[in-house]
Image 1 (cartoon, rainbow, N blue to C red):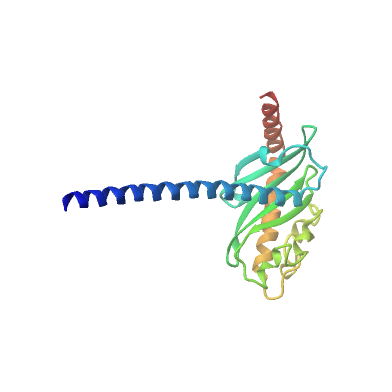
Image 2 (tube, rainbow, N blue to C red):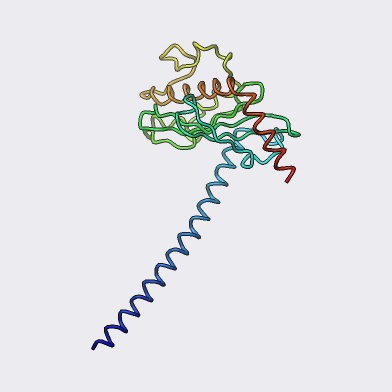
Length: 212
C-alpha cells in the first residue's frame, strides 16, 4: 500500500514537473513571438510618420529614454532619424492622461525644422463612434497636424474650435481631441526646448554604433 502511494506520488511529481516545463516553454516561445509582433507593429507605425528616403538609419536602434512633464510625466521614448549621420527628424512616443476614458498614447513626428511630419495614435480607450475618431482608420482628423508647428498656428490656435483654436472637435466628443491637440503642442514645446540635446545624443549614439 505504502509503495503504491510512493509510486503514485513520484508519477504525479514527474507529471507536474513536465507540465511546468511545457508551460514555461510555451510562455517563453509566446513571449518572443509577441515581442517580435510588437516590434514589427512599432516599425510600421514609425514608417507612417516619416516617408521612405527621408532617413537612412534604423529607427529602433536610435531610441532614447526621456522623462519630462511636457511628455506626460512618465518615461517616454524618442526615435531619432538621421540622414548621413545628420539629424533629420525625431519621433516622440508620448502619453496624455486627459482623455475622456483614460490615457492616450501617441507618436509625434517632428522634422529638424520644427514642423510636424505626422501624428498617429498608438493606444486609447476612448468611446467607439465618438472619441475613437482620433484613429486614422476611423477618420482623417489626425492628418490635420501634418505640417503644423509652434508658429503655425500661433499659440492661441493650438486648441479645438470650441476653445477658439484651429482644430476640429468631434460631434459629441470634445475632451478627446482637446487632449490630443494639447499633447502634440507639448511635444513641439519639448522639442523646441531640447532640440540640441536630443540630436546630439543621437549623433553620439550613432558614432558609438559605427565604432563597434
